[in-house]
Image (cartoon, rainbow, N blue to C red; front, side, top):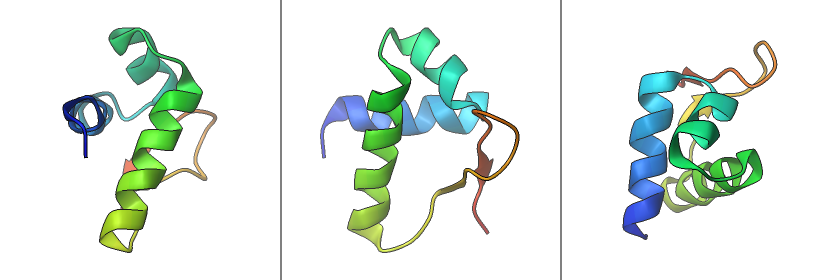
Length: 61
C-alpha cells in the first residue's frame, strides 16, 4: 500500500465525499475510487458505503 492511498483514505474519512476528497488532494475522483477499492480488496470488506447521494461516502459498519 502506498502512502498516497493512506492519505486518500484518511481524507475521505474526513470529507465523506469522493469529489471533495479528489479536489482537496488534486487527484481525479476515479483515483480516489480506485484507491479505496484496492484497500477494500486487501481487507476483504467495505470501508465506505457508496449508494448515497452522488459522491457521498459513509463509513461502513
